Length: 440
Ligand code: HEM
Image 1: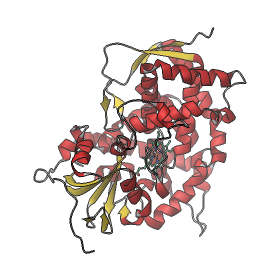
Image 2: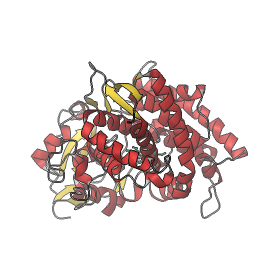
Image 3: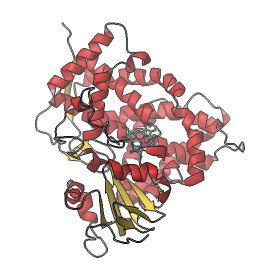
């Protein structure tokens, strides 16, 4: 490579670099994008880091130059220690083999079987909320999505254990962004490791049970899956992958559902149109898998939620082969972060990006269409989110029931500004007053 010019940017203070600004300034990326464009350098978590923003840059990382980047070398040590030897930190042949083994649990035939359970658990929560009348939705969604994930993925029925396990995940999630991996008693990371140990113990015992008596849950499919050589996953591998699925399967969905309810609470005209679509469908029968595919306006709303409120702000990678992008050279060994948040806020793709406007995804405008990798809350390329169809099905079931039968009011005196880490949420979690919707 002739041109060895590193990307523009500042590496900040000695040792810490720009870590604090990255963690604390919600405008960190947008400010630097304005100054430097779609690639800039900085230093975070002690490593020289390059940020890549915008559809072309993201396509470069996730698709066309995929083999230049490693997940294992990218995600901070906290992730590797807490999420273990799972798909999330695997690369190359090991990753391909395991993703292939896990795929059947997320195929459309498996999803069709999941519909009834998702629907039944959702209806149970709706009745509970109707009785409660006032609650914090983020906390409730955590429990709901955890119940769905643990029943469908592990075959564990919701019950007393499920509250405890979901709290352990909460503690673990807070450790993912700890600034160090010190396990002093009482430290954020120390508590996260203790939670991880309890979760692993529980999951290993569930895996052993499924190995002896497979049922029809996703874990049983994993237990029975075999690669080309006829080998299956070991107890340790199965436990780590189950941990990842359970973690990935509920934190993110909770976030998007909470923002869905918040934005509809703020935009009565959007809620009204979405409700009309649902009431029209409801006139031909109860919610079904077939109906799920007939909700174009609800799809637009979820695209806009995905754009404005991506639960995951970006993805880390380690640069394993040097590369050149837009005339700038990045050496192997650097850390890379592709930005979902920054890409979704680009004015040249989404005019007035700060406005919530589901019509940008309507048939007339389709603002995401001209460029691939413009709407990327689920990542993209060969390692696009494994649970994308699972998550979308679950969120549409919840949304359809809410719109058909319920109304909610956002209560006064609460903080709704977004907190970005560990997953995006309104600061106070969205307290609402919830009642049945009276149809005329
Ligand atoms: C709204 C819900 C969800 C969002 C926004 C989301 C987002 C993402 C993103 C952005 C990635 C890629 C990260 C990167 O490129 O570094 C990812 C990967 C992944 N997600 Fe999701 N996810 C969601 C739900 C789920 C669910 C329900 C499951 C499983 C039940 C799941 C399992 C996974 C797995 C296993 C990966 C790693 C895939 C691989 O490396 O091959 N996700 N997700």
